[in-house]
Amino acid sequence: MEGKSPSGWILRKVKSNDKWVRRWLEISKYVLYSYQACPAEVPQARVMNTLDLRKTKEIKLQPDESMPGLFVIVPETSDDSHPGYVMRAENDAMAQVWVQGLRKAREDELAALAVTRNHFSGGNNGTGRTKESTCCMCCGAPTKKAESSALIPQSA
Image 1: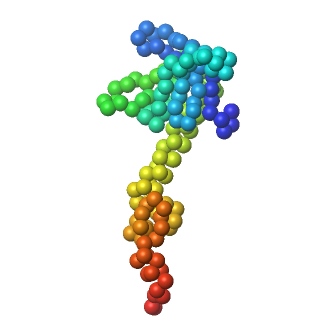
Image 2: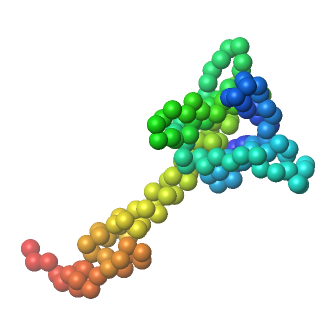
Image 3: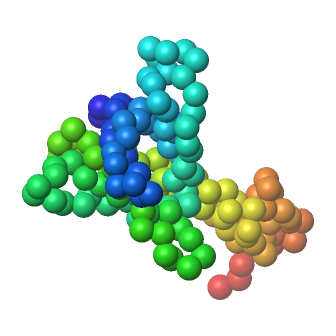
């Protein structure tokens, strides 16, 4: 699964009755999709739940010798009270693959957002120019003043 987001069958703990339900999970960009059936095998499979990975506080392994393959996805909440979604992979190694894949999807999207924010909020947009020397943050074109000062030789 190198370079590819994980997908497959996972057990998810149901908080209300402490039972486990089998779900097919897939990651697309920064969204985790949960299905009752594998969409490749059952084209009419419907999405049961989605989770925006950008809005997760923590994605981590939850070691338990009596129950291998556990990991938890904790969403951000205003009061930090959500205990998280407890998932169970086939084994500890697959749980690690899931945690790494989920984290990568989240981190890739957050990094892309940071670049976009920097682009529109006054960063140098990769141009090497500062906010003061550019006419707008959209294209990073130099201002007339910056252009003319760049052409004036500095005296020693």
